[in-house]
Length: 144
Image (cartoon, rainbow, N blue to C red; front, side, top):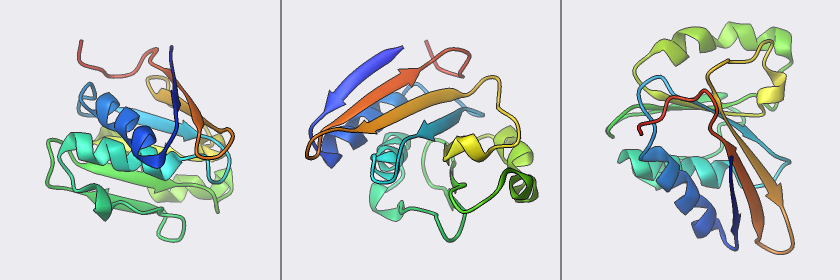
């Protein structure tokens, strides 16, 4: 497990950018944290690390899934906040995660079942802009 404290949105994104350099096709990143914890900022960093313009990434709360191409790997950004577990199956996440991209899922506690090989990123809002980020790399698809 890796633990990092960041003091700005840019630093939070930088941790995501660094993680992206280790991700391979089929990687699943589960982002846990309260509203405002920095999940979307972290995904912007992943996008940038994959070679996707980070400004293209916004919270997919209302669209549920955003697909970003043009980088080293495609990025699928999923937000399950507004869904119940029974509704998640209709999104086709199983097929999406089998694609040759990276899937970043916000609010993974709404998944009807867990992905065994996923990376788990816990983001905790601290004072001001400070965030505590814990990355569990067990079983995820990373380059050495």
